[in-house]
Length: 100
Image 1 (tube, one colour):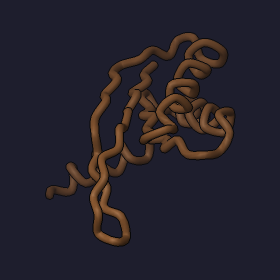
Image 2 (tube, rainbow, N blue to C red; image 1 turned 90 degrees about the vertical axis):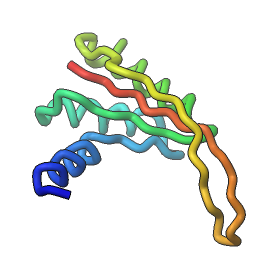
Image 3 (tube, helix red, strand yellow; image 1 turned 90 degrees about the horizontal axis):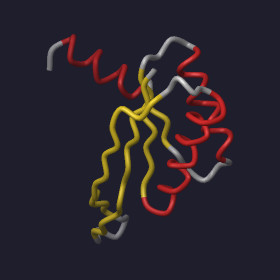
């Protein structure tokens, strides 16, 4: 991997908000902060039952706080996770790319 590729991957992870079990407004604040710090794009990612929370975060950012932000892309996929006992399970995932 070249140095330029590493920086690109690092920047992409830097502008990513992983949605978990905290309140929706905390993630909204994280996305808005990313944009206010100069990011042109922010990715909102979630898996499983938290997908609906990620959609809520994206919609609140677009409708209440930053009307100039649009969906650039929405990717849905299935990820395979390996548990501690070695069994594998499949879980749905979403990545919503927001852009100014």
